Image (cartoon, rainbow, N blue to C red; front, side, top):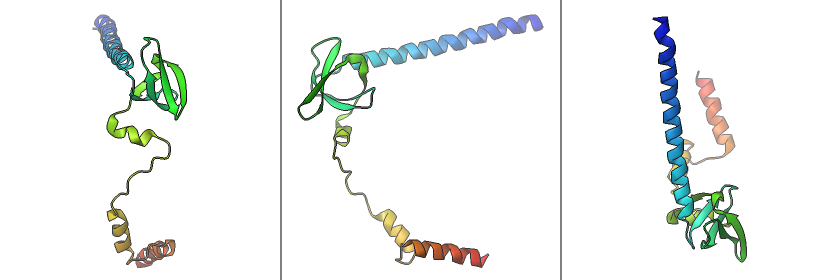
Length: 133
């Protein structure tokens, strides 16, 4: 029985390593495909965390990225971490302000405290709950 245990463990280790390498290779292929498909006008995020718009993608090795109005820098294509979808692109510009959200959360908080949302009202509620115990 013990003589079968070692080869079985080796086989399990080999299968695990094979699956891990396969998954990693697939992920690398997807990343290289995404980096190669970057075109002019695409909004991207670089591995440094910097957002920019591709100005020139004619070279197979480098791309020119506008990181601010009139400021163009040259980057290796491998520095592209992800392509920003069009619907999310506005949020990557400096000075972006998120649209107003519903006030439902604030209304629920106000109802809990009878219209008084100050810290003292919250503290008074906490004191009342402790006194009831």
